[in-house]
Length: 604
Ligand code: CTP
Ligand code: CA
Ligand code: CA
Image (tube, rainbow, N blue to C red; front, side, top):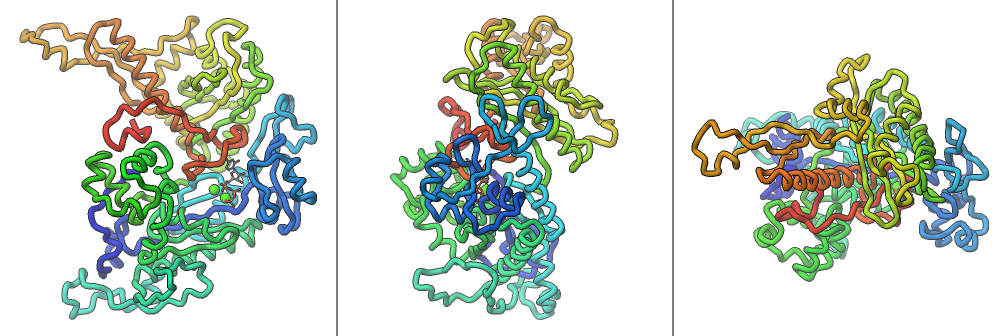
């Protein structure tokens, strides 16, 4: 998120031959950069419509128990929203086709469309939507093989189209391939004036001014966007033709702008945001709508400047913002002006997967817990197997268990996930049970009942053929895992590492032979970060390490929750946890401890 920060808006400056021709300039600062976001319309509802071969003009909703999780556009026309129950929705539209999402039922290995699905006995499965999502991704890749594609959630992906667009510009305007002999600054000379663009058929072009009087000369950056728009249209038509899904898209110069304008013309529409149109588009927008400004940082900015819209903040200087919110707040100043330099990270696989269940009735005994762990494990086993079909040898680094007990803050435990040749539900469940034991202790009756249980894999990475690189998967966590596996008493969480303490030797003791005090340290098995206490009393160090560990675990927990496939929207509608790729609620953190802007993000 905090990629290279800029000081100048390069995208409004002169566009030169170097920007078009030099391989080194094919980067996030290039004024000819083209980024798109494609999002599927009413995705789960569309999946059901296609699966059942229904007429797309019929009103269709996807139901989870009594609630609705997706509503297609014909049903939205009746005023049906995600907040409604099936009964309310049918009052508004008696002909509504409500399809219940797939579920796992006890005893069945595969999820199905069971007619008697109940929360007490069944568990929601999104498998069908995930599979369809991968199919959509394959069409993206096949249609635009030279674009960078970052899968951002189950139904959306970012594209960096800069490379294919550059190629196409040179194909259409071959005279740009040579710097003219009389160009005053050589390769740093401005390109000749751009041709006028015919936008017909390329999508909705956001206006530069309210009057619609354009007047401004089209730039090469606009030409780049128009070519990008043609490519995006081609991909979207391919998805529609091959799979039957309609999508909507935004085409702009960076991810945040593409994401913002992608929903302007839903369903089945695309929107282009040119540099010159950014001020008019952004000014009236509530600034908390922007990715990453929906949370605490946004609230703090709102009260610091008594601001609601982006326009309200434009008079704040970069320096002032950085003084109030830290160096990195330069990123906020940039984004208010439509500038952002985050990369589209090629990511077309899955990084994590989480199976989650709101348990009704609640889990009261360890045996109840084991039962649901088996259900969750069988889902994970199936999903990992499927992921391995798509990405051979992919294997998770870590198994994570989260539980919620009453209104207590959620708690979690994780451990490295041992490799096995015969992946089974039992294998996962056994490791899960050990984690559950660590969380709830030894008794059969739990002290406090569990109302949500989630089991997930994280750090999914592709291993080498035959898992030769197995050690690589375990990193620093392996010895700990072994101890846990063999230990009869709960394994110690804390690794004692002999470390040299600078602060200890600074304690007025000149003798080099003074035994250095040991600091307690723990290496996180998930990210290998070394957590270390400062020198101090032994008892105090234990407490300090426990505190550091708890904070660090919270950090991973928060990351897991917002994991790979979470939504990009800052404030998604109330989450229905178990129907999601990964739970979407965000962990509430204590008061930020970090300085500056970092305090507003879980970034440690
Ligand atoms: N989803 C969900 N719970 C949420 C948000 C989204 O289950 N709190 C699911 C929806 O069922 C949806 C999919 O995730 O089909 C993608 O979400 P999103 O793109 O936000 O909505 P769509 O239903 O696709 O509708 P739109 O056309 O507005 O994108
Ligand atoms: Ca969508
Ligand atoms: Ca989406």
